[in-house]
Image (cartoon, rainbow, N blue to C red; front, side, top):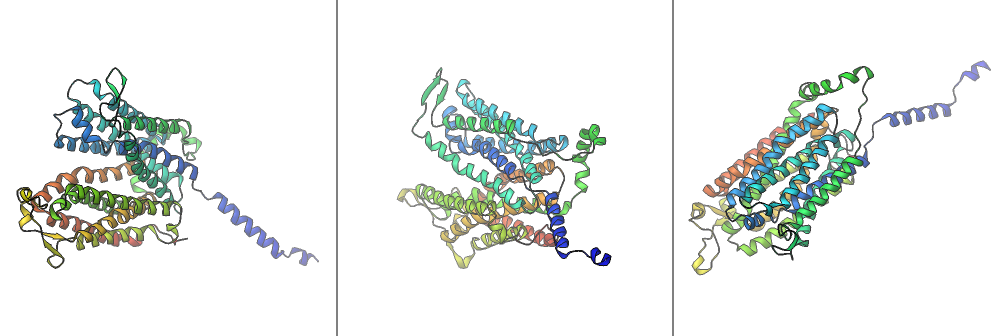
Length: 488
């Protein structure tokens, strides 16, 4: 009887194993989806300021200060990007060194509100208002540098398995803000300048200032969310190290973190995203001049086609972001494969849209006296020697690159980059990531625009194509080492 009593019941074994597995699952970290949604809402509200005034920037500057030139406006855009580039690593380091995300976020929103207030008071300055606008856009660029802290926070509150979904929620929020911003601009379209006098004939409500009041409201709402609803992700700290927490955080952010992950993989991600960003810069810098000079389209037709193309790009991008955010596309595609697909699309774009002789034709020369649209040899000497690619092929591939390839590369690379960094406080490294992308945004147009003016597509496409090929080779070299899991 004793021997029989010592035998274990198979049902007890199954129950014990089930309880053990349940305990293991309970101990595993879970994605804080409420936190992901909150941060996505914060960035949505904060990013509206950049999209809501985008359509009226140059007209308003020209209205306030007739001495402003398009060249000066270009400097304004570059300085805004420069402010973002310089302060992104600093904001990220601040968050990493202190172990706190909230203070940099609050600071970013306060800076944004100050910028909006200054922008709404431009009429108070008697002269040189273009320089005040320069200060405003510098402030806006700095305010958005807290993006690096939010990217690090997303990585901190999401698991590796859910990282692509979390990153997609974040990207989807930014994309929606870009789409909604111009709609607010249209709300104030009937209010022609000077519009409604609010205070003393200097604080006005019109087509130019209305959007900035919207930006002010959204930034205040974002500030309220950060102050009252945002919760820090607290890491367990041994009591013995409590007094040493701050200096050790600073040292870790500067030195130890760099040794805790594979730097070569992180650099590969940065390089691939920079190559993708270069494609964006090339397309945005050259497409309008190509439509008018190479394709021979009129101003009105160029605007119509561009608007339709941008709407299609927005639809594709939103669809992909939504698919990943809902976890639908993550079931079928891994991040590293998504990045590879994006790189292949870039290569196809550069190769097929290059003006090869068999698939291109001579560029039509314009003649204003006979109302013939086309290329002006006085402006572009290469009109007489270069060839024109098929516009239908160009538009299809351009939309595919901007709507599909760029979106896939953003989701895949951003997700993989945060996985590679691992358990460190990612603020500093996310800031460096954004800094590298801003280098392309700042320096790209300064190189691409004059090169296109001098030689047309040829050398611009060669540079972009070779960069993408190098990025693809780099990606293939590190492919097996990249974090991955089987699609669920």
